[in-house]
Structure formats: structure tokens, C-alpha cells
Length: 298
Image 1 (cartoon, rainbow, N blue to C red):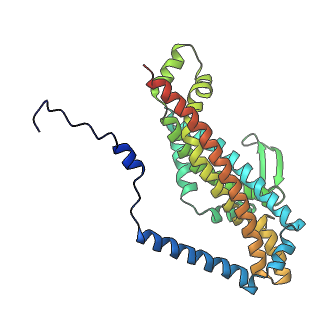
Image 2: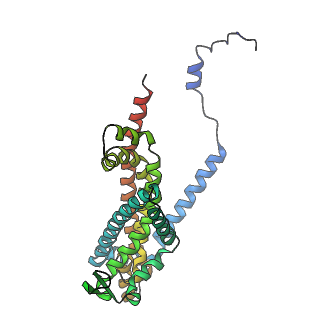
Image 3: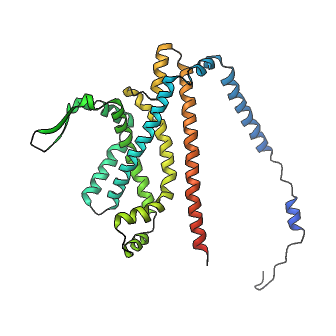
């Protein structure tokens, strides 16, 4: 094409032709849809017609007091462990980004230990801490302790579960918080110092709100993973949802129906968490879109 040539304008009726154009038939897509429908129907028929699920037993225990109490404990463990993990993760992220070398080394050692050890081993370790430390005391070194406890009395299944879940989660939250803080432009820190803000106020008012846009989505995934990971505390006799149904089927020998009770409640809990995560992500992404629109204005 010669330089300076003028391209012909499209026909006036081209837009109408495109609007009324018919999509090409896609036989492979129809076949795929039919296969998916058949598989879905087969799964539904399997669950409905298989008498071994004993659905009458499922509905009998679905709202049992023991099961609901275990569900409540699962929710408590999820919330408290995530709070512990968020606090530890924020502190370790700041240490990793700081100039204090011993702090960075300590944070790296913490990440190495708790990310490299299976969660179940950590739970069992904390539950049996009394074997290594029979008594836990607070006092001045080389002097009589001011306060002292028996480890067997102090380390209850609840405390062992919170220590295991919270400390393990803190190792993962460290990387999430660190990535979120690094996403904030360094000039934001300089601008905050220029107007006389203290480092703490600059972090809380300037840096953290912007970093939350990048912290919220992976944190939501961690909350969902934590809700499912709480099932591991049943190995230390913590009365969570799984342990509650285990106690029932150990007595009635109705294993599959009681496991289905746990499945239903876990799916309900995860569905609620998915909805909350989506709502938070939309809220923070809306603020990000507004900021981009403001930057795009001349």
C-alpha cells in the first residue's frame, strides 16, 4: 500500500450485518455440554439412589448439638489462628524489609522452620511439649522464677491447636504481607516523611491501605485453607467439627453418614468464606479502579 493512501470506509450496513450475524454451529461444544450433563446426572443419581449414604442418618445428626458445637469450635480456630498468623506475618514482613540484620535472620529462621515442617507434626509437637519442658516459668535469669506452671496443665488441646495453626500460618502470611508492602511505590514513603509523618503513622495511614489491595485476595485463600486445615486438630483430641463426628461414629459405627455431615458443614462454611472473599475483593478493586481513572484524567 502506498503511503498516504486513504482506506475505504466500511459500508453503512456493515454494523447491522454484524449485529444480525449468526454464530457458527459448534458440534464439539454441544458434545462437551452433553457429556458434562450426563456426568452431572450420573453423580446426582449416585448420591440420591445409593442407600449406603443413609441420608436419614445424615439429617438426624446434621443439627445435633455435638456437631454444632464442633462447627463453632472450627470457626473459632479459623478466626483466632488467622489473627495470630496475620500479626506474626506483619511483624516478620517488617523485619525482613528492615535494616536490622539479627531481625532479618530471626525472621528467615522462623520461615524456614515453620514452612518446612508438616502442620500435623507441629500440632503433635505442641501437644506433647510437656515431654521436653515439664514446667514453664517466667522470671529473672539465674534467679527463682516469679511465676511457674505445669506444662501439662497449661498446654491444653485448644492452646496447642492455636499455637500450631497460628505459628504455621504466620510463616505464609509473612510472604503475603511482604509482597503487598513491596507493591507500594517507594515514593509514597518519601512523600509521607516529607510532610512530617512518623514511620508508624505513615505505615498505617499511607502504606497499609494501598497494600491491602494486594494482601486481601491471597489472605482470603489462606482463610479458606485454614478452615479446612483445622480438621487436623482432631489428632490431638480437639473437639472440632471432624472430631465431633468421629466421636459419634465411633459409638454408632455409621462412618459414611457422619462423614457426610462433616462434608456438608465444611462446604457450607467454605461457601460463606468464598462469598466474603469476593465481596472484599470487589470493594478493594473498586477503589483501585477509581484511582486509575483519576490518574488517567488530563
